[in-house]
Length: 240
Image (cartoon, rainbow, N blue to C red):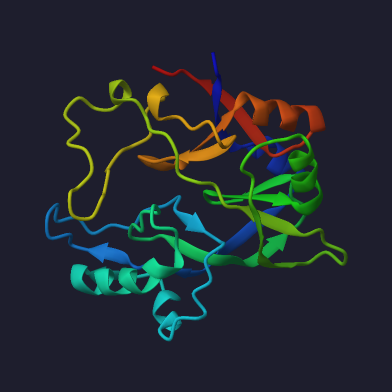
């Protein structure tokens, strides 16, 4: 039976190193101001595509400022981005693109975090790939360091796969909004994964209905432990 783990920041390791990453992506879709169906103004988190370059768009500046936009303008801007991303990618309000821009102060562990963005130093990234971990994709950042000889930090582009099982959601939850896709889910205290939805081709992924929750396979967890890498905690999550 396959085992899966909720991956989170090891705040003890981060505090011990004394480092901090303060950054945001170069571009992003705006939030949505008052969805015409669910009437909510919102912007999601956990939808990060550092591989997507919006510099080729004539309106690239329209994606540089985080803000809510009316539904019609949000859809117009989303349509500009759509040809640049794979067809299966869901472009929700607040989806972010391009390199992470900002600064790093102090020293950070092998894995570092900027909010829900997961980063890894270049050397550990390649060592993990040598352990036959599947589906890892790392992309350059544009982070500024105060150290004289900093190591390169890569952002892991973590695909959306799998879902929380219905049994750990509120029984009256209506599901995603049919217009804007908003789930409106809070992370349950005792999450359960929907076994039928879980991927076999990647060892690290975000949940499709709760993108801020990163899940790994046992193979990824064992590789991190074998290499002695710091910066992550693992909590096993049951499946059903």
